[in-house]
Amino acid sequence: MTLCAQNHIVESLNKYGSMDEWSIRSVKESGIIGGRVKYLYEFFGDRDTVETREPFSAPEGYYWRTNNVLAVVAGVTKTNNTVFPEERDGGYCARIETHIESVKAVGIVNMDVVCQGAFILGSLPEPIRNTKDPMAKVLYGIPFEGRPEALVYDFKADVGHEAVRGTGFAKLKPLGYPDYPEIAIILQKRWEDGDGNVHALRVGSGYDRIMENVTEWKNGHRLEVHYGDISGEPFYEDYMGLMTDPDRAFHTINSKGENVTVLEEGWASADEQPNFMIIKFLSSCGQAFYGGVGNILWVDNIHLEM
Image 1 (cartoon, rainbow, N blue to C red):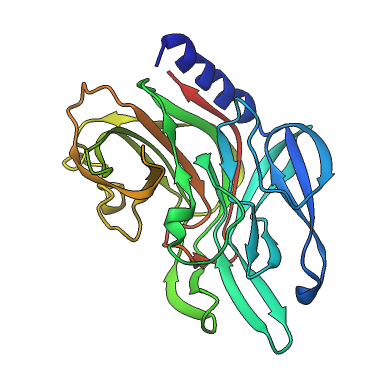
Image 2: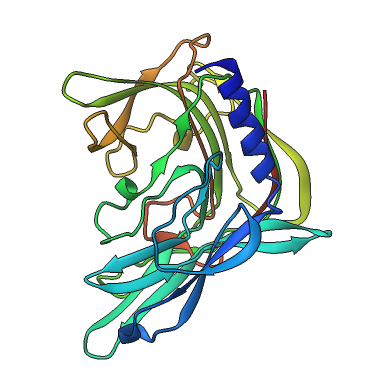
C-alpha cells in the first residue's frame, strides 16, 4: 500500500467520522410480517431517502459500516436498524443502541431477537439469509499498513443494563449480569497459507469498555494504540486478549472467495508493520444475540490520529 493510498483512507475515515452526513434506505417489509416501511441509515451522503430493496453497496471511499441491515429469509424481507443519526449542537452524532427486534406473523413466525448496535470499519454483505454463524456475516476491518497513535472521538453512554439472550429460537432470557459498550482499534499482521487459511498476529491494541454512565459529552477522548504484547501491562484486561475463540473471532474472504475464520496466533513484536486494521464501536460487549437491552452509546467526531 502506498503512502498516498494510506493517507486517502485516513482522510476518508476522518471525513465520514464527523457523523454529519448520512443516507436513508426506505424499505417496505414483507406483507406477511406487517408490510411496514422501515428506514436504514448509513453515514455518508446528503440525507436523501431512497426507496429500495436492493442490497447495500458502499460508495468509493466509504470504509465505515453500520450493522443496519436488510435481511431476506425464506422470501420474507425484514430490516433491523440499531444506529441512528441524532442532533447534537447544530450538527449530528450517531446513536448506537441495543434493542429487541420482533418478527411476528400469526401462525407462521413469532421471534424476538436481541440486536446489538455497531458502527465498524469493514463491511456487512446483504441480504442476510439466516441467523446462523452471525460473526461470519460481518467482515471487520480493511487493509491498512499505517501505525496510528490513537483513535479519537467524542462520546457519552447509558450502560450496564441487564444482559438478555434473544436468539429468536426461544423466549427472551434475562441473564442476571450487566452489559457494557465496547470500543476497540486493532492492528493485525495477516497472511494466507496454501490451503486458504488466514492467520494473524496482533500488532496493535486499543480497548475501551465503558463501565459507567457518561451523561455529559466527553469530547476528544483519546484511545491510545499500544504496540506489541500488552498482556503484561497494568491496564490489560482479559477482553483485550487475542481472538482465539472461533465463536467470536473475526472473519474474512480469502483469495479463493471463501468466508474463513481469522484466529490470532500470537503477539507481534512492537515494531512490526501491520497490514490490517479493525475499528469497532459496539453498544454491547457480549456475543451475538446477547446484550443489555437499553444500552446506548453516542459517538461523534471520530478520527484517526497518526
